[in-house]
Length: 250
Ligand code: ADP
Ligand code: MG
Image (cartoon, rainbow, N blue to C red; front, side, top):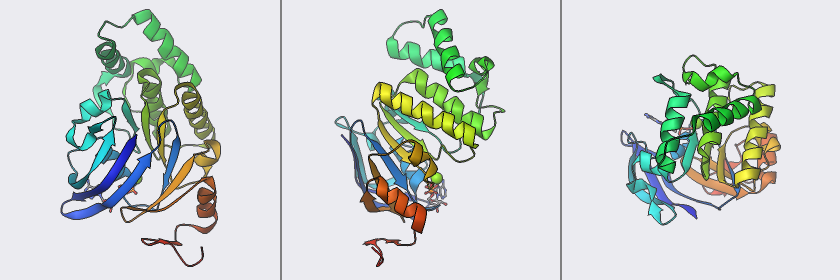
């Protein structure tokens, strides 16, 4: 249902994703692991069609549409949501303003302010965020961990069906990691979205058991497995993986 086919992506003439193929099964949790600099964040940004990246070849198909031919806004409208590795601050726009605008565009009618505030407060409580986050500028002056939670606030309000989660665990203390993992698990139970979790640590995957695990190296998928593959990486690192698959010790 979400199919990435022969995707080659360049930036400044350097190939970052190299003929990458990946299928995400509807309503399942997929983990993508790999060392720094293998192209994991690039893949997320390209799915959202960041114009900085040149798509040399390939397709990203979702619900009969090729996302490589769509604008980022339309990709978001189609229900694809990215939790960024480093969420950017947007000065001058509050969480409430952005979310109310998006929700009223989605439902084609004005948002009921009372219900909106109630829902925002409930989600803030659930994420252990103070209620004043509702009217804070998006991510502005927030710590790394608060930004990640702030993005989860957006997730719960917008209810997307496909979620790309780029290293949400980086920069989180243990308590915040648990809150974030519990929140994602609850969201999954409630909405059964298709999820792609990017991480190079096993801790998050211990908390949210993925249905399948992929290893990326040099812009390609070099291994596929179930949760046991993540445990193997935790014990042995990424050294065993080569472009042609697992190394000799498999
Ligand atoms: P990962 O998320 O797996 O750590 P990235 O996707 O961030 O890796 O980066 C993959 C490679 O592409 C790295 O070598 C990185 O320096 C390069 N790259 C990514 N985005 C850009 C960019 N905007 N400009 C230049 N190089 C980039
Ligand atoms: Mg990254």
